[in-house]
Length: 439
Image (cartoon, rainbow, N blue to C red):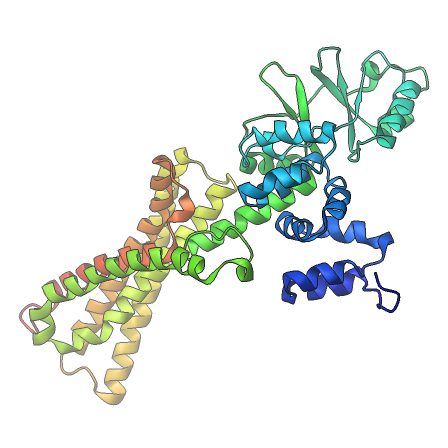
């Protein structure tokens, strides 16, 4: 840092960070006081840390790479292009490098890929005083996360867990085996990150141990790791529900062409689907030509069905993601949503009928058969909204059953599906109710 440069406080740089270019980020980061630079660096995302480290001089890279815990170092290494990974790995000390290589062998979305292999461990035969002394020795070395102490035997099998409070409250000569809890919540190395996040939510834990098939402890997944996972999963689901591929980077860091690619695919699929709407309209061309007034209500009918379907699919996608409903609950959900669709359709249908009748009485807009037109619109809304609600609620179940992400049942996709069927329902109702009058 130059002598005449003004220092930058971390909160100031954090606010300005998204708007800075890469070179400006490096220069600004060098102006952060050393006492707070570590905390600022650790507050950055893995992608931001990786970009910053690669722009630093080789000597500086080592300092920041070695500041990271093994699981965080894995995230940074996975954030860069393959040709840059060796350069970052070479900055790590030998012990950390071995730990990072072991973690890289796991799938990124599994508990093994999230875990930190450094955790506090004690033996069951230790007294509470011996365990406390041993904990102090471990935390002076490289163990940073001290939520619980895990009780392991000589073969590293997980026997129990003890909190720091339990150790401090125990008599000095009390054995760890006598105070530890044997009621353990664990995950296997290949447990999906969404399942891990649900365990954190259900049990309110700060860390969950990861064990292999023989119950040997391999590491811990901490709550700060899972918070990031939840954010990523929620972001991905929201983007999919919106009708596009999930972005793998912040908005401004996604290239223009990459953004087009992720958005254009779904739009093309939806566009081709909407072409079926034109086909359906063509099929009922004769009815429309004989009763032009029917065309006035097409947007009303199909938008109501699409909106009801979008509501239903959003509710079920969220419920499936949170395990509030499961695949076996599809029949209960269908029964509930059919009733909801009928009730919502009746409400909208009633409003539609009243609107047509009021306009007819005031403006004489719809001619002598206004009552039949109103009844046609009302019945159609009842059918379309019920069908939209049923389709929107069942599609996520179907996708989950086929092994796909239920979030792929995006609201625009459901709306497109219901648009076509809504036209069929509308004109079929018109053909029955208006036969012998307008048709």
